Length: 103
Length: 486
Image (cartoon, rainbow over all chains, first blue to last red; front, side, top):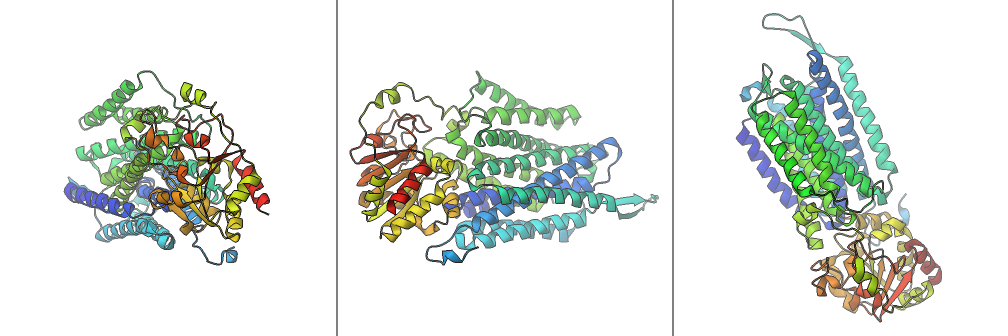
């Protein structure tokens, strides 16, 4: 992909983000932050590439270890972020539902 | 120069699908009913992105080098290392997510932001050390365009990391909420920022390690310097801003790696954080620049507040409050950060239940900057099983105070201060506030008459004829009211 195609995707995604985020109800702004946190850890893709790369020489090996450390950090975020979002969202309940029925 | 990146069309398609899943994840949050489905879309998108990368970039061992061919087989050791790394992260993440108290959510989010920032720094560092693996270099020479993207990526990542660490320490109480002001900090900050940008430009000419690592070091420093002077009350803006940065860091790395999923996600998260910062600034009537410049939110109330405390005010008991509320037709509860600190949300809901049994209509009014992060109060009320359709935003409920019998303020202060409307010299002038003074009776829970809100401003509501001050710890006071309601 050339730079302009990538830039186009980026600019379009900023606009999509703008409209999607304005439609998020203010009551869910905390879960919004938690879930955006989780998805920004898609940076794990870069970390996986670094970890799997064939390390040549000293810098190659360092690169691999940096990658593995990044995989750990990003995984904390992915699993923690989605889990905590799920936990929060499960708490939002409507009126007049059998509140006693929940676990 | 783009030919160096081997593009597998199926992989590109998979990353695009992952990106779309992330858009749907945010879209789901437009209402609580669709939100859980949205979160599942997020998980699906992440799974697709991770599996695709593991397949297309499987760790290989290369043997039998020949002129133009080689034999590659799966490097199981590395694959296991990667899976172990994911496993360690997953365990830490899930355990933390399960155990964390809802009141500690702002700290947790700040901590998670710092991890995204650090991961971005590590990935950029790995890409710098082994650029061929990422397809961004030929014969050790990194492409010019990739150098800019990498330089910006590592800079934003490092700022996100150190800024979030400071935000975490402040939110977690390891560090005082008071702004720490360095002399000449604006000059220092601008000089460091200029230095970073200058070095990124120089990096395109010279890819020596010192340039890359100096950019990284300076960026860690600026993140630290930027957040240090920002006070506790401005934390909602800071947390949103760091949320935005973590997105831009991911996007910058996406540009480096030509990865659609990362670019789309980065753009989504970046704009999400930026919009939240904007909403928070608007709710405080402060410009983004003034928040970033910092120095607000100290205990610098000074003479005016001290002199004003001589004014007469009425003190009420839990029994008075219980009686007033049980006789009311409608009660509006205004929660603030103090409720979170006192962990009073559960007993508050008990009180509301008792009142509802008496036939009182109970509503909750939430200011956008109540608490320490966007939506903080909503989560706490949801945790206490308050139905979300009893919870209202500022614009939707503010006109109702005039027809309300009791406004019950628990742990909030600045967001109900009429000075924001009347006193031009007040630091919170222009901030949209709840018109609680229009309610027939105001019940104001406060620890003591001494302290004023985070903005350090006295509040006229305390001294109104129709205000009854309930001086106690928020949780204890509400517990007593519940007892008095019988």
